[in-house]
Amino acid sequence: MGSSGVIVELQRNSNSWTKAVDEIVKMERKIFPKHESLARFFDEELKKKNAGLLYMEMDGQVVGYVMYSWPSSLSASITKLAVKESQRRQGHGEALLKGAIEKCRARKVQQIVLHVDPMRSAAMNLYNKFGFQVDDLIQGYYSSDRPAYRMFLDFDSN
Image (cartoon, helix red, strand yellow):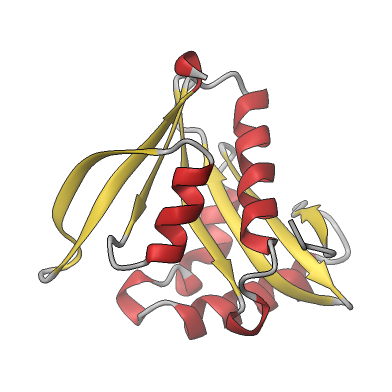
């Protein structure tokens, strides 16, 4: 893995909160179509007590982030994983996903679920590398003509 960035857990009362969230919202708007972006709801999402966010910082800039939640003691969800286009294929997404899995595992959840566009082969390869398996194809997940694979990582089988 080639990542040389620093992974930081976003803390609500930290001095870096505003700067980090502002940079993440900018990435969110640039990477995801408007109807898939959490940019308008980011602060609201992060206020939830069962949600977390890790971001990678390099040279004082946020280059990627992963948002996750654990709605129950049984299951967690990776809700977003994104890396700036200019920083891809350097191990940042892998490092962020690994960090989120470790955070979820520390909560003793039995399974992590995520959704991914089947056309995003790099994302699919990353999730497969970590042992995620396709559970179902959900038609119309992103939009009427864009389905998503629901994938899961089951800790009981690892």
